[in-house]
Length: 202
Image 1: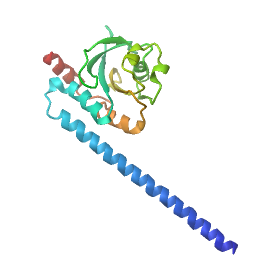
Image 2 (image 1 turned 180 degrees about the vertical axis):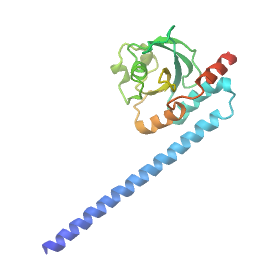
Image 3 (image 1 turned 90 degrees about the vertical axis):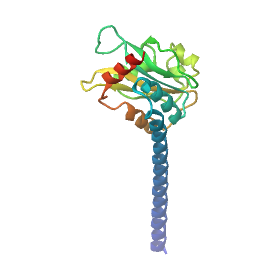
Image 4 (image 1 turned 60 degrees about the vertical axis):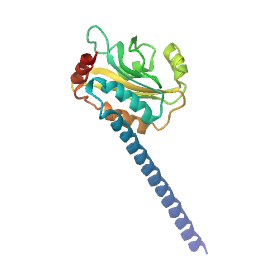
């Protein structure tokens, strides 16, 4: 009968929607478990470090937690404060097996330029070298994907940025950005103390 058929169709549709909701809930639960594991990894790796080594410990454990080879943190390096910074220098750079030497570089032509200028998260899940063909550092690192967030103070001045790179495509932007934001909240507190401790270490 038509009425019975319509009722069956409605029930089947409701059952399908219920299954989708259950699947979404299971996916969310898995993401929450993964996020908790990431946080445990980072906290375990940084909590026992002295302040002078905090930035190095941060980028190393951030890379391990997100399962990427490269992570780094920078500060703006223009000789005078500019509304839109043009140069940055690394404060700590994890290269997968060791820390790299810190260096200064111009932002023009790099994915970092968009992070600093836009004062927002930038995510490139793949083909990063094709998107920024003049950035030879991406070639040297065999980088394919990138995500970074700016470091901003209470006056909305950009202080630098925190970034990770991978040699394979990167997915789950929300998860990666959420982890980065834990260590680069807006506004960023205690930046002067972090910088001061690093100078004392050096």
